[in-house]
Image (cartoon, rainbow, N blue to C red; front, side, top):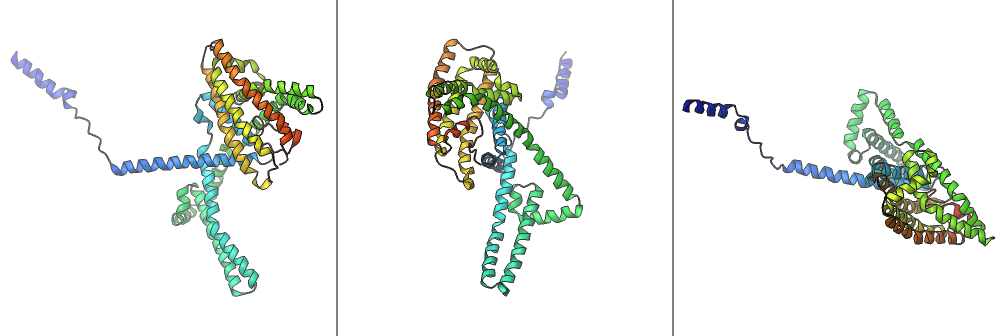
Length: 396
């Protein structure tokens, strides 16, 4: 028995995986790899911040241009619709990385053209002093060389991907361009990549979404705004307009979210569905509505004086910067109402409605007096930047 037991122990000692398995090696701290990870995380965060800034500036520029305003409105609607679908606020930041690439290309190209601008200024001065002189001819040649070198650098940087590191290292771009030209097919590859990037922007989709959202929202606002404008001559009509605008404004932001979420024009008029969502998340709806109204009210101060066309994008940055977060929160509130299966108690629903009433009254009061303070007069009532075009400059 002792021999058998010793044999079994020997077998277990030899065959047991618990005994033969080596202990997992301890993970060693590698400073170089850790430093690379930290640098990569920092660069990624910086790239994201550049993308956010580029996105806001781009939307502001689009919002100040005729017809392109519908692209900006469509983007804001799509952002709220995506948040409503997923319930995550971060999903409202659509295309931040692509915006970072575009912003980097625009900013770095502008910086790389500064030497050419400086040489152009000197060449112009030399031309004025001595048009046929040797100095003027040399500066013209220098200008041509500077422009060619700057364009080669910009084109090579964009062809490599348009990242910041590509613009900061011209020798690498030149060597890459020579090798790539020797291999062939650069033009076809650049053309296909550019077309693919433009298609990824989905500009027709955003334009269609913004146009339909504009038309449907204007249908809701046309009657109360018209009555409000006629209140100058017939005060009872103005009172009806005030009451009608107050009723419409409460549900309009969430009807827009529903339209963007389902991409159906009829969804802009499905009031019962929005009311059902409110019953399931009344406080979230109230918070989103308050933020939407409070974000829109200060922007009426920019309508007191006519904004010059050359700097129309600057107030547009304020408009988009205020309204973008508000629309994202509206999408979050609407999505939150869809996640819950049961209605909240009638007390909480009543408290949510009571919280909205003073905000509605304040907003309608601001809109009423805007026709007397805005440079557009009564026509400014139809702009409604909180629900229609982000930058309400109908004259542009």
